[in-house]
Image (cartoon, rainbow over all chains, first blue to last red; front, side):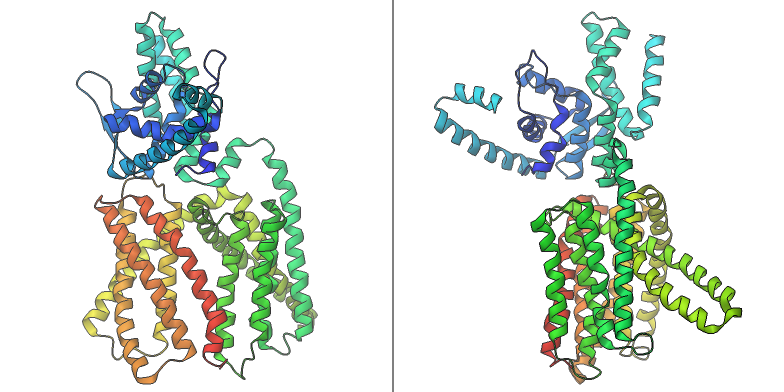
Length: 139
Length: 445
């Protein structure tokens, strides 16, 4: 359900520097919504922790410009995919927590289906999943 | 540590100029987390701060993203990204004026060939907006740099409408002809939406932009009309000693030019002087929504207590149609000017009161009207009024339902926006039905 204008809108989230693998901006932007939703599907979280989780999941190869995560989170909130709440945990500072909603899970499922279809098609033509991962990175 | 706090304060002040308060707070929490982590890894506080700020990204990009997400307004992208936008506006000014002048010249050619104001042929009234709105559509096609195909798609519906309404053999003093004259401007306005939205009809955001544009255009047009009225009045008074013929001559030439040219000039103003109207329009909505809510709920109570029987006549449905149109206008504009992220507030509740009262009133009127039509049968006017009423009733019922769900937290505001933007084509289709289908249905009477 990612429209082309959304892709471009978030395209410059991603710092592309010499020491990380060069991943196409459009591809990064397209993957950002499902990635954030998937992380929130694990558990509710806040911006800084979400970014850390993204780095962790990608071994530091997906580098987002930190600030740009927030407009995306707000967009997801506007669409009703996540709810927000300001909270202060016992030890720690006041933070805005995001939790996925039923609509958010439905959107995530939709994304998942689309990515699976794409990945399967590419897999079929390229053969192995190792090469697919490589090729997706260069797409 | 004190130095670090000073740096945070400075950063807050700097970011706070372009980003909203609670968003700054959220970003600051992020920044502090990052600084804490980097410090724990052994960096000095000021180094950690520097890196954390750098990772946050460039402020102009960040604030632009926030501006986009929080209002969805196309113009803000232009304002924030600036660059060559000033130059573009300058060129737009002369081109928009050229379109306005062209429309004014056209209207005078038409006026002279129709012998207006000595004679007032109905075809002039029927075709009037076809001499104006195509220029507005053309101006948008130019401004949005539409390609050949979308430009043709902009022009073709106007041509078709022109052919259809002029081929119909209306009878003498035909009421379907007057209905065509009344509904064609609505249809024409939706035809302008196509170039306005750069030919992309599926985007909800752009539809919302068009709704906003319509409201702001209306306000600008009224302002220009008021100023123009004062100007014409003073001109008439000043020229009176020279003779009435001079006054009439001046008015005959200046008035139509102004009325027509202002359509395009107002559109240009909305597009380029956005910030002025952005401050004004939400304030007007905020003033008039409570007033209408008060008036409507009082009327609903009075009618419910006294009954409708005596007061009801055939004009009433028309009055209620215009009332519903105004309520819908307020609702639409209120929705489009609202910050979609804000929590439900008193404005949303007031709006719901206005909508529900209007619905209650309308259902009473429809009941009475149903009996009347049962007795007297359908006429073109009654059909058009009833159809419009139903179209509006369905929209407002949906609005009331979704907005009350939103107020109790069962639904997102986004759903309400979607409902309105998805409903827009219904209005266009209804106007098209009255223009194209209704005349043959009633034998052009």
